[in-house]
Image 1 (cartoon, rainbow, N blue to C red):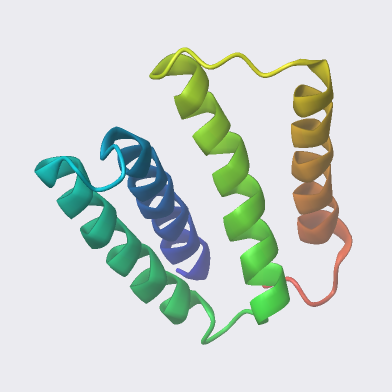
Image 2: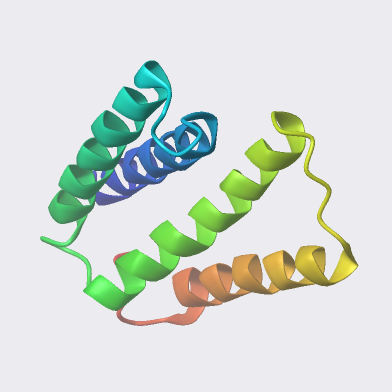
Length: 109
């Protein structure tokens, strides 16, 4: 169940971050409301995850996968275009998350 909560926390954070751009500095009501609700949900779910997963490992998953997904939203929704160094950096982040999941004894397999 811990990975379901973590996945939902990541999705909520990605929605909140995407809405943060759409809020235009909190000048648009509904994107701003979406930011607040999404971040509250993300932190609540992350709190549930921390009951059974070390904070560093949980945060590595949450932040790492969130960065990749927000980048995909930026590409698909906002027409942003990351360059090769950005893509290589994202690949390293994903690789780090995979190494933690596959090889770390502190990850909640």
